Amino acid sequence: MRYRPNALSYKLGMGGIAFSVLGAFIGLNSMNPTSWFVIAKILLNVAILLVGFLCIEKTKSYSRKSSIALIVIGGVCAARIFWIPLLILIHYPQYQDAVATGDLSAQAEHSKYLGKTITGSRMQLTYLPENGYFRAITAIIFLVAAALLLIAAGVIGFQKSEKLNKYLASINIKK
Image (cartoon, rainbow, N blue to C red):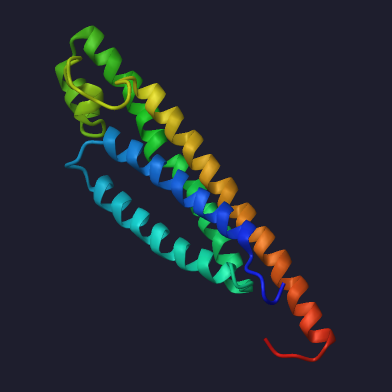
């Protein structure tokens, strides 16, 4: 273990970051770009990417603190489910009801949260269906996958670092 990197935690962590980016792309593409949510979401995603990648690299060399940090980042990814995807799930049906009834003030109110890829014309070129339910559920799936992979990477990294530290302590070598 001392001379081989922790490849499993590294691969799981990279998969978690990849799913986190995919979930962020869907969320950013579905939100109104003028809202403050977008700026906060971009900053949070940059922080997750930078700190996550740093922790994955350190976990590869059996760092206990970085493994714990990966578990925390996985928890943050799980908490992100209750932010943008939940906003889409709340405002999309209300926007649809407002369109059906012709209530322009309600449409404007819910359009503050939903992007033009959801509320725009049906002929718009998008890489995802315009359905807000599909977008929110897909983002939730990606964020759950990211959270599970990052937490698994952290737990496995923590277990392996504890195993290595026990072995090094048994032969009286400082890491």
